[in-house]
Each structure stands twice: as C-alpha cells, then as structure tokens.
Length: 481
Image 1 (cartoon, rainbow, N blue to C red):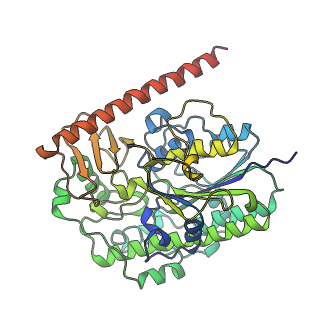
Image 2 (image 1 turned 180 degrees about the horizontal axis):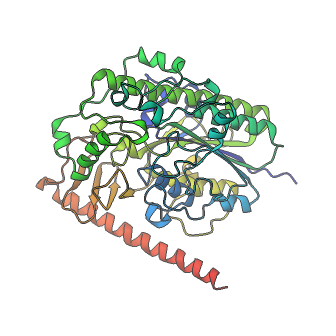
Image 3 (image 1 turned 45 degrees about the horizontal axis):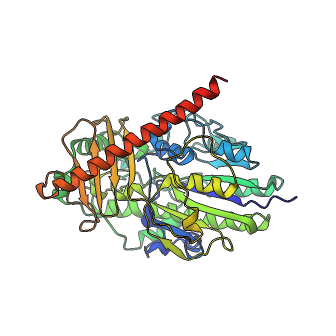
C-alpha cells in the first residue's frame, strides 16, 4: 500500500532578516523563487525565534522547547535528542545537507544521512573541523577564503565583513550546498516519505557574494540604518559593552565600526542582499530538481532562517540582541493543493512551532512534552489567533560577555527585555515605536505595563520549569526500566 504522507523539504538559511524578500514588501530585493513561495504559500509574518544565536535557536526549533529546556543557551552547548528521531521512527528517510549547527557539528540527531557544511569562518569552536565543503576545496587544491587571508588585506578593518568571492562559483558555500542537494535528489534512489533539511550557510558573514550578484545591488539605493544618540544612550550596559567588544575582536571576519560611513554600510548591505539572491537562485534549482525526480507533487516546502542580522541597526553587529531585526523571521509553508496559498497570517508564533506542525503532518508522535504549538490549524485556514506572547533568551558567551542571561517577552504591542540580577532593561511600545528606539524602562508612566510583563515572564518560566520537570520524570522512568 503506497505511503501518501507528504515529503517535507525544510530549507533554513543562516542569519537572514525578515526584510530580505521582495514579495514581503521589500522592493530592493531580487528574490523571484522565494517570491513564488510567498505568492503560492502561507506566510507567518509575526514569527519569532526563541534564541538569538545559531545553536540556541536551532536546538529549540528541533526539540520544540525553549533554549533553557533544551539545555542550549549558547553555541557549543551539547544538543539533546530532537524530533527528527520521531520522523525516522515513523518511516521517514531523514537527510541533512548543509548547516544544522549541532554540537558536536556531526552529531546524528536522528538523521539517516548528514552532509555537514558549517559556518564559513569557524574560530570559537571546532576551528579545525573539516566539513564536506572543506574537503571539496582540498580536492580541488584550493585554499578557502578565511580570516587569516582577509586579515592580510590593507582595508580589512574597514570592510565590515564584506568581501568578494574570488574562487570558482561552484565552490561558494551556498552554491556548494544547493548543488549537493540537487545531486543527492538525482542520485539517491527515490525514497518516500522524505524529510530533507537543507541548511544554507549564508547570508551569515563574512558577506562574500559572487561579484555578478553583488554588482546590481551596488548600483541600487538601499535602506541604510540611522542610529540616534538617544537610542545608544538608552541601551543596557551589556549591549554597549558588546558594541565595543566587536570593534576589538573580528568575529566572523567582521571588525565592527562605531561610526561607519554611508559607503561602508551600503557595501555591507549590498553584499548581504546579494548573498540572499544567490541562495534564492539555488532554491529555484532545488524546486526544479524536486519536480524532475517526482518529489514535488506530494511535498511541503518550508522556508525560514535561524535569526536576523543587525547590520548596524541600533549600532550593532550581527545578533545577540533582542530587537525585532534579530528575532523576527520569515516563515513560509508552500504546498499547493494542500494549503490555500497567497495568505499572510499576522498572529504571533514561535519559530519552534514548526516542529510539532511537521510531526503532525507526518503522522509522527512526540517523545516528550513540547512547549511548541502546532501551526497546522492556521495552515489549513481554520480558526487560529496565535500566541498572546512570544519569548526569547540567551546566555553569556564569548561575545555577549557582560550579562549572565537575557530574556525577552513580546506581545503584539509591547516588548520587555530582562537582564538577570540587574536593574536595567528595555521596554518598548511597539505600536508607537516599531523601530524600538525609545526605551521606556525608566519611564514612570509605563511602570504598570512593565510590571504586567514581568508577571508574564515569571509565570512563563514557572510553567516551563514544571513541564521540564515532567519531561525529566519521563526520562527517569524509562532509564529505570
């Protein structure tokens, strides 16, 4: 009897902001294939991650629980089991091609096959881990573009991480991953149902597009950040300290600048956007290949990223802050004939909510309690209001050094950012101040709202701890027999 469960193709980019898809209202972008997914699929326009760097966000996504429950509060925290194991046990062939950012990098986490391609420029952990991309470069007798080489450039400290890709096009990490996905689909005997996770390393820095993609953006007028002194002065000390740190330490080949010129900002964004367009081209080729080999007729294609990139918004480099440019993600589900397309859903949801959604679509059962909530009712067009609040968190690491732990609670109209054991924080009225430039933390007129959000945060952590306790009890019972 044929298995009619859908093939699930889960495409995840790295560090891609919400405002990088033309069809979502950003005309400076060139993204025809993502536009197709938007026009024919279902878009969650208010989807927020749970952790503001790679591993916490991804571990939460693939466990269905918040970072503190998953035990991954920063990069290089060891991953727990994931719901991919449940898909495999339910009969899915589970394959990863590209980035997952598990720890260790090559952990199986339920996949039958993994073709690992990790960060382009690895220094803080597993610097000498050689992934599939490293091996391919070595086989061609080439040396990967990397920090040691960029540092030799006289303008290294002025580039804001933006460098031209100078090696053959097919060896750019995002082209390499896209081509490998197409190769696997054409080469491996058709196996259904299939769960294929494709992880593009870009547009995470260094911002290194192939020049022919960068040139059109260099000629365009692009939206550039404008940071006010009021914004900077109202930021909490850990964020201000991180700004300075990032000018002193070149994380991911970026030397941050406190006062970059418009020309420097324009080049950085042009290269970042060009990398998105490169990935978009590969997504088009993947969709074509899926159709050619017969997977697409019964498939659900899901697209998202793991967190955003400040690119000097609020005066910051990369991530680690709780601004919407970091926490708000594109989340698109495309399945013509299964879900009515062309819809944009504005209800709040958590990035990790896609986990139980996928399991429900696959007819697979969860192995532990999840705080994630299925989005399937929304995809089906049923009544769905979304969450009242979303949360995010992150622990101290080598970049965010001046706080033990930060937590965000966000409703549709308000956001509070809490720093453990500190009197400072952030409070934003998102309705009046969607750009999050006016910190109302110390405004006495907002004291009641701040207290209200504190209570929400407290109740959430108590509820989460109780669920985590129940999960641990289940594990203990299994271990005892």
